[in-house]
Image (cartoon, rainbow, N blue to C red; front, side, top):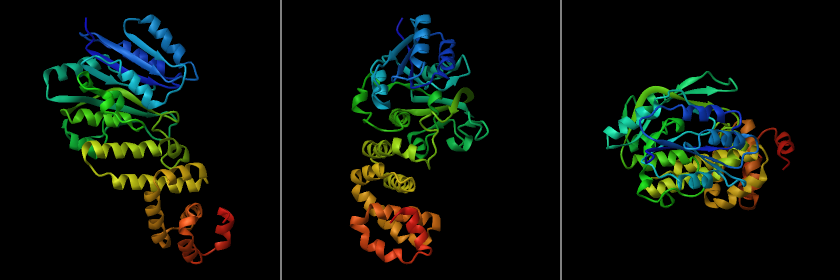
Length: 343
C-alpha cells in the first residue's frame, strides 16, 4: 500500500534522546501506512548505533540515512527531503518526541477533510533540561493571536509553529524542493513553514501532543549573547532573511541590521577577530553603516558598552581612524579603557 505520510527526522549527536524519539514514532496508531526517514549527519556518539537497532526491529517502517561524513544541516535536510514521496509530511528532530499515539491520525484526518489547509500543528510542552526556566506550553495563545485558523501573514509576524508539531500537505510532491529551498539558510523549518503557508491556510489544534527540549546541544538553545551562537549562525541567518525577502518580496533590512549589529558587538566583546573580519568582508557596506551608527550613539553607551564600542572601532581603524580619534578623548577613564582593549 502506498505510504500516505512520512515522518522526517534529522539527527546529530542525539544519543541521549533518540530512543525516546523513535519510540514515539513507532507507537503511532493510524489507519494509513506511514514511514520514518531519519537522516543522521555523522554523529560522533552512539546515535547511529541506536538508529540501526530500531531500523532492524522495524524494517518496513524506518528508513535510515547514516552518514560517514558530516555534510551540515542544509545538505542533510535536502537529501532526506529528496526521498519523500508521500502526500503528507510530519517533522520532528531527534531530541524531541511525541506524547499522543493518535497525533498523526488526528492531523491527517483534518487535512483529508479540509483541502484548503496546507499546515496543521499543535501545542508542545517546552522543557528546560538545565532547569533554567520552568516548563511551559508553546505556543501561548497570544503568540497565535488567539486564533485556530491562521495565515501566511500571521506566520510572517512570528514563527509560532513548533517543529515537532507540524504536518504539511507536502507541496513538493509536484514541485522540486531544490527550486524553492535556498542553500545555507537557518532556520530551515521556518522557511518550509512559510513555503507551505503560501499554498493554503494553517490550522492549530489546542492539544499538547509533543515535547520540545531546550538544552545546550540544541541548535536554538544557545544564548543570543553568546559568541558561539553568532559564529555558528549569523551568516546563515542573514541569508535566510535575504532569501525570504527575494521569494516573498518583503523587506528585512531592519532584522538583518539588528542581527549584524549584535554580532559585531558580540565578536568584539569576545575579541573574536576571525569572525569579525568574516562579517566585515561579507557585508562591508552594512558593517560600515552600523559602525557609523555606533559612533553617532556613543554618548548614550554606558562604560562597559564603550569598551565593546572602541574594540569595534579598533578593528575598523583603516576607515574610521579619524572619527575614532575625535570621540576617543571624550570618554572618562581612558587609561583603563585602553588597557582593557589594548589600543
